[in-house]
Structure formats: structure tokens, C-alpha cells
Length: 414
Image (cartoon, rainbow, N blue to C red):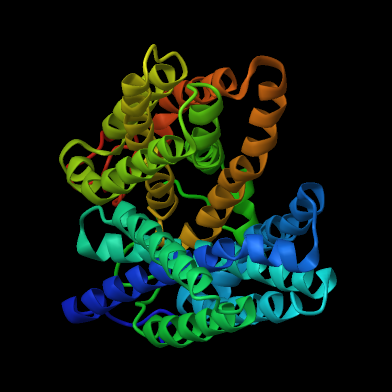
């Protein structure tokens, strides 16, 4: 595997291999996580947990991710994205197996397994996003959002397999242990095809980029602003995942099936936006595209919340999903503009962005208790408005000392 710099840029064939390997890393991450999520009801029943106890148990995943994310930048900087993904895939497999087998014994081993799962997933996420920025740079065109679409496809596949396992009455321990083994074998094998995170044949840093240890990225205003930008889009994405079905059923009085259909529309629009978005980014540049999408998301949220009829609510979920689609991947690309600082910056941006996935559910739940969940979703529109205001932070860094610092977005997005 490649984890340290080489003397020459990778060949086109090596970049193609790395592109495929990065897709596999994203798909594998989504597949493993959805596999676990698909069996949560059976684990709950096996352990006899009420909703409050289940919520506390699931916090183990968040706790592991929160510990891993700030540490992952220094780790990836030191050992490279290939070794990090390899090690974290193995750790994720161990955590998933521990949680699966632990469900036969009690809560404590499941909590330990979920903590390991969350830790591995957090560091894996940063490492594969770093490799995604490297591949994107070598290709000379925007592809990061398609990697994230791959993650979405992985979650769909994992959920479908999980549903089939439930229907076939396959035990949780057997199903999730098999998923763990499959993900470890496939991802570790493909991670060997990653290319070096930094090519010394290219400039190590854009002009004006600060140097220093990996943790110094926490002091960079641009990096922190990108983190805020990602946080707002992550909030829009996470709240949509968690609350659209509930709001459609309780607020718009749709049946359970039709409420789930609204959620499916949101996911479909977001996946489509991530798959087809690179063409827009390459043609118009990052800032105009993400600002337009933020406005699209605002329109979608407002339409969904205040829809006078179900058909308008469905249209709102489509616009909401499309609007939320590119914020996270574009933020990752912006964090990787300077190859010498990519790992540190992506780690910081991901750490800030993931706070939205933790804050979103309780924020909407608390507001929903007072003004209904449907009306509480309007806060998403306010955060997307903030995203439009700070979107300039994702403008590409100049790549040579002769380029002006205020250079507009180039057609390639770099």
C-alpha cells in the first residue's frame, strides 16, 4: 500500500485504481454502518431496552466518533490515508463483531463494540475523504460528491441486505459478523491501491498556507469557516434523515407508508445531486453552486413546512434533498486544496461538521415539543441561509505563487 510520498506523480492507471479504491472505501463504510442500523430493533429486543436506554447505548457510537475525529488528522498526516483506512477497517470489523456477539451476553459488550465502531468510522471517514481530495486533484475535476453518493449507495445496499436477513430470520450475530468479515477483506484489499496523500512533484502548499503541526489547523480562520459551512449543511442533511418521516406523518397527516415515501424522495434527490453535481462544480465553480443549492434547500424546507397540500410537501423534500447534497463533499474538497495540510484540515472540518449530526436530533426534538416538529424544521432554513453567507470560504486556494489570493473559482473547481 502507498502511504508515504513518492518521487514522481502517480500514473493515470494508478489514479484510476485509486479512484476505484476510494469508491470501495466509501461504499464499504456505508454498507457496514447500515448493516448495524438495520439490526438495531433486534438488538433492542434481545437486551430488553426501553427507548431511553437504547438512546444511551447508541451514544457509544457518537462518543467513539468524537474521540476519533480530532485525533485522525495527526494520524493520517503521520501514517497516510491508506494505512489509516486499513487499520480502521480492521478495527471497525472488530467493533461490529463485538457488538453483534455481545448482544448475546449483555449491554456492556455491545457498548464497547459500538464505541470501537464509532471510533473506527470517524477516523476512516477523515482518511477516505483525504484520499478523495488527492484523487480529485490528480484527475483535475470534481468527483468528491460522487464518492459521497457511493456512501449513500452503500447504506441502501446494507439496509436491503439487513432487511433480507431479518426476513430470513438470520441471527444478528451471524449477519453482522459476516458483514464485518466482508468489509474488512474487501476494503483492506482495495486500500492498497490508494495513491500517496502528497506528491512532492507538486507544490506542497498554496501561497500563504500556514505550516506547523496537524493541530495548528484549529487556529486557521478559513478552515474554521469551512467547518461552520459544513456544519450547516450537515445539520440540513441530518435533520432530514431523522425527522422528515415524523413531520410528514404527524404534521401533514400522511400515512406511515406515505411519510416514508417523503423520506425516500429526500434521499433520492440528495443522492442524485451528489452524483450529477460534479458537472456543475466543474462548469461554474464551488461558490456559485453551493450558494444556489443553499437557496434551493431553503425553498425546499419552507415549502415542506408550510405546504398547503401533500404534493407540495413532496416537492419540498426533493428540493431540500437536492439543496443539502453537495455541502459536505465540497467542504471536504476545500479542506484538501493544499495537499500538505489536507489531513489536518479535513479532520478539523469533519469534527466541526459532525457536531451537527449530534445536535440536530435533540434541537428539533426540543423545539418540536413546543411548536410541533413540522414547524421546528424551519430552523434548517435559517442555517442554510448562514451557509450561503459563508460559502466564500470554500473558494479554491491559489495553486501557484503567481495566482492572486482572491482568484475566482476556476472551471475545474481548483
